[in-house]
Image (tube, rainbow over all chains, first blue to last red):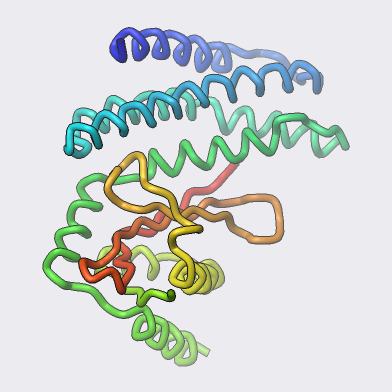
Amino acid sequence: MVAATEEFLHHQLSGYARAWESDRASALAAWDLEARLRTALTLFEHVRRLDEQMTADIVAARSSWTPDSAAKLLAFYREWERPTSQIAKRIAELQSKGHQVEGADEFRTATLHARSALNTSLEKLERSVREADEGKLRPLGEIRDELRRRADAGR
Amino acid sequence: MSYAVELTPVAEGDLDSLPPMLASHVLEQLDRLAADPVRLSRRGSFPHPLYQKYQFYWPPDAPREAEVTILFRYSQDETTLEIVGIGVVHYG
């Protein structure tokens, strides 16, 4: 079931990313960009749902993400994220001319969420958790004092 | 109930790598989180379903330029938030 969904979503996302890559329009009308944003947001929602389902399966199995399962999920986020800089530029172009672009805020939020997922290093997280398990933790107050001292010394 | 907050060296390195203004905002948000972690956080999805996730935007009063994600867990005696990661991504 999930495998079939993954294949379907993979085809959808690669078509979406390719469509943006081959886009040669010199400028987009607001209605056109808004329609494209709706497509982007619908696809993002599909990736999020898959993420939630994979997470629920992992929790039910009392397991955790492996490099393979993480790579599989991240491939979807990466494919969705591929054209986002190009899209953000299109949005900025229209907004700089005074146009309201419906869906622009939601697109910004979705982009940040996708990049947050892609920004994750499982290896680094595991290292940090090991540190916590070994009791290598420092109180926030101590860290704050040190940052203040460093900032004062730099003045 | 307010919780104590502690950071692993990895999370401390994450905090250290931030520009001072953003680092200062993250410290404020950690205080906020300590006061009400149940309301402000949600169970993490990716990358680790067993940890809590608190996300907020930067800057706080302008169009969202960045998203900050704090990953943490509760200590065994449930008095402390153990911060295991602080991630920042940008838009544009």
